[in-house]
Amino acid sequence: MDSKKELYQFIEKQKERRKFAKNASPQMQQQSLKLSSLIQSQGSIFWNRLLKRLESTLNALHEIDFAGSASPFGEDIMRVVVNSRSVKTIHSWTDLVRDGDRIRCSVLNGGIYYLDFVAISDSEIALQDTQLHGDPMDEGKTAVYVIERMVNIIERALG
Image (cartoon, rainbow, N blue to C red; front, side, top):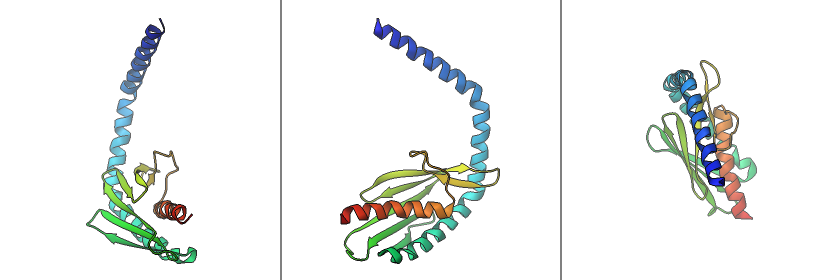
């Protein structure tokens, strides 16, 4: 009897979800097209400003006994390296890959996470770590976010 009840609840939830998706679909498609258009027009600008902010953030790491560098691997790929200045063999890196509507971040000893482009106005985009349900971030906050994750990995390794 419990399995019939669970099946019934499952079916009802699916019907409700599909009904909602069907009704919301035109509005969601409109928002998706708007975001795609914004990403297409603003994505390269955002990416280039992000790379500059990464550089300036890396340059400030000496104040906390860290160092870092950024190296491009083509138009939409950047490797960011951070290391401890006191124990130079302990380091981390993140490959940032701009891929359509998001940036894939592959971290040494830290897995992969995604920063999705989101619209914060009719003419502005930002990045958001949707896996953590974080707030939208401009280029400066994104640079700090990426580097802070690597610093945390190194600090854990240093004990």
